[in-house]
Length: 407
Image (cartoon, rainbow, N blue to C red; front, side, top):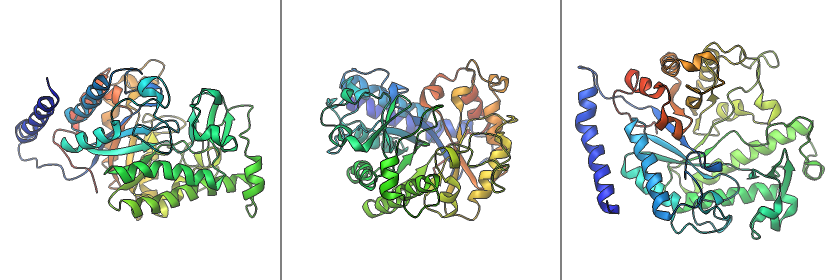
């Protein structure tokens, strides 16, 4: 089937569903849903979701990408969060960073087409929002600088990168690094009408036992006036977010800025403002003051990664949802909930994830909190595979009709 024919076919199918199929599936007397986030993450790091492997032809890559957009439509989702800068590289022609190796297998080699540009155009043609997902500071999932293409900024500026836990990271404590990563990400915002810029939970790296993240030189140069190195690190992350928010609005005012932080800010045993949890604390361990970002309205939306089941002893979904709802209450930041669909039916998970209704119960619980305005599912491959029918149960119980994303 040719390019135009395939696209026309997809659009016709979507039109037929929205005008007839949705109406047929809708219970009598039930009106169209107003607005709620129904999203899925489409991960590219390590070829997690797309492309299925490096080295496919441009036509094969494009076909797979469009298939993922169709998967979103088929599951009555309205937003795809597409990872376009997985490791200080790019899934669009960037003057700042090399082409990602997830495309061709060779960093810096052009795939012969524009994945991000295509994703934006084709998502919008299907009535989907396309959120461009960037990882600000991860340089590589290995620690060998010689494996980076010779023109890579981390090779041209050796002091910009830190080896930690077998990986390479940009140094968040250097103002010149912070400015560079913003410029690299904003290049995509300037070129494409993306509906949002999206960060995940990686700012400072997650702790590795027995290792120290080496930012001594940066701290000596820029840490004066802070009570502790931890306070300085949190300020570095805060600066990235405040500056990025302002620059996005200056470049493309209609583009949103959202972040998906780790689901626990602090435990109540550490801080009375924290949640009733006994879990990893992102405020203290990765220097992410996510509560502040919401309270101060620095970001347009927040999607805490609540990848635990209801009743989890350390981090109970049923306790975290009301905590985040209270944080978002009265702020300008919209709250969506990140859902661990990848756990449903997977081996080694708590027994609750063997129940296809667990995920549906999450959505039922969230409806009790008006601040919770939708859900995002991790990740695309799991939406499609739907190992035990957990996503099908969500559709049957909650997504019987289409919905538009909040704006």
